[in-house]
Image (tube, rainbow, N blue to C red; front, side):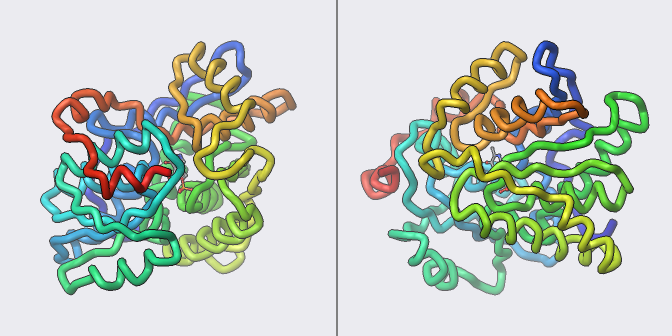
Length: 320
Ligand SMILES: Cc1ncc(COP(=O)(O)O)c(C=O)c1O
């Protein structure tokens, strides 16, 4: 495995059998006490690359209340980087508003874009020589390396008898880096495991192309052959049945899945993990070993929110 890495979390994260649901869970929510979920492994690689390149400032972009922004702010600032983000409007959500409040209280400098179409120009205007660009969702070949690491970590847990080898891993797909990295890691570890990527927005065929393309790029980045890269990409199936009204809108099946998950000790969010878990529950009704990869932070936000000021009007307007 190549490339720099800053250790932000503690691994391996636990694998657990969710009794009564016929499912296993990979608890990446527990990866770090400061903030958990799937951004941590990507940021280990991205901030590691930023440090190795001698950059002192990190620039990113995302939906105003996204997990990516808050995680980049928390870990980037803790590691001594200046952190700036182009923030884009999103559907109204308390969770999202809280994320942005915490990000700003930790030192994030927000730059407002009025729409996704306006974001690239805003981003370009903020780039400087001292700046490392963290892509949307942390998803490029460098960020995805974090999930190549994660797949190998799981291979080790399977070899050690912590769980049987999964036939399928289920994970939400936003920008695709999590699914892509896992697929590459499973290919490199010669596991039989396939990846079901649960689409949380549309158009679904674009998400599928994006995740598979990123898997090929990541595979080439870690030195797999072209044939292996092609096989890694084909391990990903994007499931478009759980999007509902679209990004950020709750789904009735997601609400039911959230109640089931709570009984098994997992906290879900409506945008990503409720949809992924609903899909995992359906897959668990068939024969085979299903592993749901828990990508949400469940670190308590209250201590961070307690000292976080309310959003100024210009930022509050981003939640529509
Ligand atoms: C909680 C959660 N799960 C899953 C995802 C999807 O991960 P990816 O962007 O790597 O597809 C995200 C992305 O923002 C997320 O915040």
